[in-house]
Image 1 (cartoon, rainbow, N blue to C red):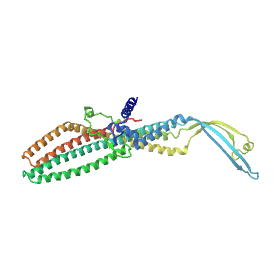
Image 2 (cartoon, rainbow, N blue to C red):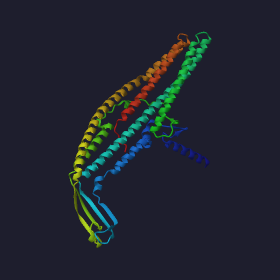
Image 3 (tube, one colour):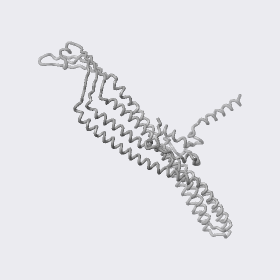
Length: 427
């Protein structure tokens, strides 16, 4: 029975660990995979949450046309004192209940309904823009941190190699095979590497902090990322062709243009009457109907009411002209955004393709540099090469490794830039 309980506890432990998200704490650190970023930004980023709430507010405002046909009920009640000439002052209450139903409003309610639908679409576009912007920032910080971590590890490895070369140089100087200058140059290189590590660690901490901000994490010191860049596959190199309408900035400008055009149409319909069916019941006030109010005679009214606000007509005409100009302004901005989007998309895809080609040969370049380093080490040990030759070979080897890291970092950062341009509904 005891053994069965132990086995059950072990199984439960493994089951819970298996269900834990990839970003859960691990050995005191919070491990985050690249695939986690989209979900974390969508669920935790405050700017994205604010954009979601704005979209919800716009959604709550839709359905205006249907609500415009609901009865409008008003009620008024009061107490007044009234006196005419030499008559005694009368003191009496009054009250009235009135209901009205809109029958016709010149299409303004229908246009208002379309405006609110368009504002909802705009808020969704803005939400996607905000999400893509924050996700891009998270991705760029993620790849930057990964690149810096690899460079820090490379410097640590370079320190070990330099330490070995320093010991070798001291032995050779003690045996009279070389001068002490070789050892000094390796000591100076050690100082340089240690300073580079300190600088890289500071830069990594800054980028970890940016990543934590994008993911709405309270602290960044214990964030753990993957150790290596993923392999670049043929799918990564596929260049998806985007139509201009798929660029988020273009969509936003076109949404704004549509809203302004609808508002212009709404203002242009000022001359069309508003027709209401109304009914009322109540006790009039003394100041309105003295005799009937004094006699407590209640009134019942019903009828049709047509209203045209002639005084507002001039202002609405000017407003319609202004809205037309605003719509034209956004139309021009959309056209320019299309040009900018196409140019940016072309440049980014060109960079992505070039970086993909560089990555294909990066491993071979590092292998050649490693072969050269090993050959130089062998010749240095045989006395054919001197200390500066060996140091140069070491530096050249790690330069190629740095270049390889930079290619990967730039490749995936460029890919993040391209993906941030794409239209994608998230609600």
